[in-house]
Length: 77
Image (tube, rainbow, N blue to C red; front, top):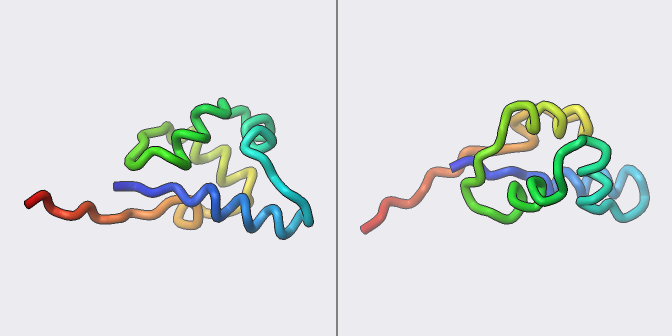
């Protein structure tokens, strides 16, 4: 499963800006719907487009591996 590290990237950007950053601000800056960002943050295994990933990497000035990570799923017993 792919886990998005958007919350971590937002916290890093908040530190750089010296203020709180909202999902709405990220949505507006990246032209990604706020609900889509919320799903990426909160829903396990949410599938999104590479265009969204590209926009988020550009906004946070990060690489893809800083934005997302592979987390192996536990086998079902």
